[in-house]
Length: 243
Image (tube, helix red, strand yellow):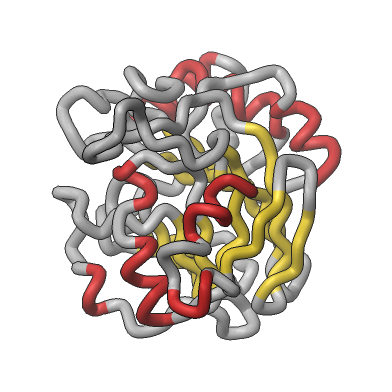
């Protein structure tokens, strides 16, 4: 079954997505094109109007700075990340829009609301005495030009306030991690679907490495066990799309 909302989601493995909107905009989310399942390299990307990064781990930040330096998209991000980007992007990071959880900005004609995620955010800091901190992890609710809203959870455990995200923002689609170990597994993701009230879900952050062992079929089984067997799980192969 298709989404039928004039929006196309192309998955490049892990949590790396390209979203093409009804207005012809290109959104890149967590652009880790160097992941072992990606069929595409970052240097082949020739357009990005809006860039979203959920947290500072390298498997999500990935190619973001290089892409932003070359393509100059709008980049709404958590405040601390925007401060760091101001020293690394051309023009002093003017495209980086610092914001925080609960806030909404409009960038490139797209509405972006930052919401909570339950995870960590420190990463390796060469030469530093401690890890590099780029602000707390977040998720995003994105509203495109025709009013279609989707929730990109980022890396997270399931948390009870996902019900509030569903109530406040009414996303029609959720993109949820299912790999386990570093994030929620299929059983917890099924609970997240229940809390959010969505009828369509795209699993992510699985299969990249052996330790991320959750699968879409396990998610389908867990949804059925919760009486949610009519929820559509869209699981393209890397390079494939949902539209």
